Image 1 (cartoon, rainbow, N blue to C red):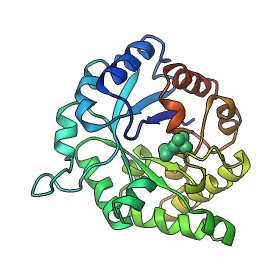
Image 2 (image 1 turned 135 degrees about the vertical axis):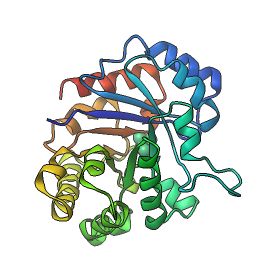
Image 3 (image 1 turned 90 degrees about the horizontal axis):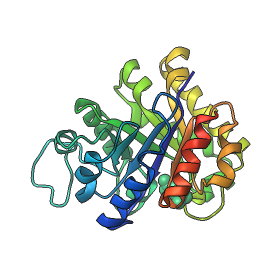
Image 4 (image 1 turned 90 degrees about the vertical axis):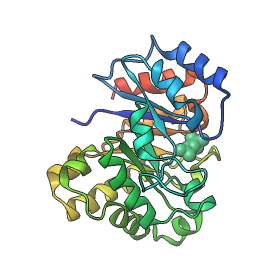
Length: 252
Ligand code: PGA
């Protein structure tokens, strides 16, 4: 059985005070990590503050990271620094990073290797544009993204990795993929991993859906066979809404 994982992706939102208030509001109420992994991914300058207050069942993630340990990369964030402040997750290859900061599949692959070197759990994002969905080429497109991102990883790393399938047209638009559509693509991703590795590895790996997930649609999404959780932007900003999402995952 795969443990569900709900990750809030706050993007470039929340002041330090708002983030600390959120942690204060959810901390005692987040369900045990025995049943669901609950994560919030925040802006870098407040990660340490959040880690200090994360409690037993909440974990903190970064939203991006460089693939090298250090160097002349103004504005970047290193894996050793994230590790040293107690961050445990990192979102990699989010479609906004790919679109606005030219993050390529090759970069994402290097970043995943780097995350594992420093004990961080990568949340690898993949997803197609509306044009690709409408052209009917979603599966081969996602396959290419997955194959490139996972290059050189071992089976234990694949089992530890989290993939977030996020159709770009569903992010922040209020348009959710139907649960069947999301499940079909997620099954296809699992199929790719089966082909690259083996059944056991693919069955152990957790795959989230992301794109306009909210308390009103989480139950249906999580009722699907292959959807193991969600990567949530807008609906993760509010404490009550985040709690509703993680509580829904406990029932899966
Ligand atoms: P959304 O964002 O939930 O606001 O659609 C999801 C994401 O970008 O991870």
